[in-house]
Image (cartoon, rainbow, N blue to C red; front, side, top):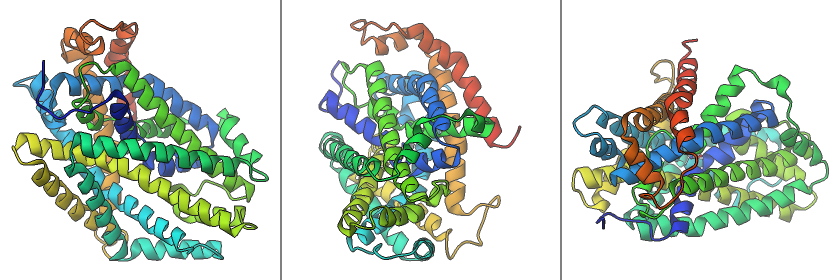
Length: 453
Ligand code: PFF
């Protein structure tokens, strides 16, 4: 069957674009601070367990719905389950993408500011208190973060309007290898610092006494966020996969790349932090307050190395964030493009304008609009809470129930085996996980995060 929709041109392109979605601020910003505040390597082991047990099966389920329907996320469930209420699951995914981009782009904008500051040697000779002041002044400023956020979204827009093959795929093929090279260089510098062993120990020697239900839930939430699951992002990308793409293998590759980048980010951050005796448990401000200070101190005798290291680190963050904002943007762009028959350019403009609007509100909510709250949260925190803690787990739950219980198993089998041409030894286990393991586990996070237990 020849489809008229856009497609990724190659298997490598499809994998790199999907891995680009998964690898992002979640790996280099969120993973290290979650690991740092949840006791280190025991958290990492649990995280890997959740990736294997829930992440990969749910990713495959998203691939099945995406490629099986050949439609954007908003339409995918409707195509496979016409005339049912499942269409709302797709609609929710589109909304989630839009809302995530509304605050993710604010943090992405911060990475641009920090890249520029690093490039202008703005961190040299600063004290730890200076770094706190720099971040607080900047993030609460009404203009600068807003401008960076808008610039980041315009960059994303520029790639999106070029289309699936010439925009998303091409950008991912350039940026993902670049990202990998940068992170490996940084990792080598970091682990060879004097005193780096303590950081390695923190990463590699599990201390299970620190594990409680909170750590368990954080590890599961991190797996969802980092793998871009629960809102149909990878579903949209899978709708651009060719009919020959091996869905199971692709999900494994994407998950392995994502997990390796997270661990590499840990190998960049922890050895450097421990080598200068700084604890990595600062939380979300870790990469904006603690790290620039760590880099200055760790390479204090070699200012040029400190300079290059800092610049490369923030370039890495910008690149990682961009491949993820592209994927978030594409979910809503594909929806407007296909559902309302708008040109791709017009659809993308609506999404960009809407996200800039949300971005302005979430950025200002950290400064001049601090007093305006809903349920006790400002816009930035509200978007983060509502999407990551409610919409994503709920979306993942719906996808696993849809593929595990509702969808005809013949369709699932056809997609996984490419109409009988591949062996699918894991089929029964896959269905079992979708039917029982995933709904129970996700239901548990969901209830817990809402504070119901
Ligand atoms: N996975 C991305 C990251 O780790 O930064 C964030 C993300 C992208 C979450 C796309 C959800 C999503 F659909």
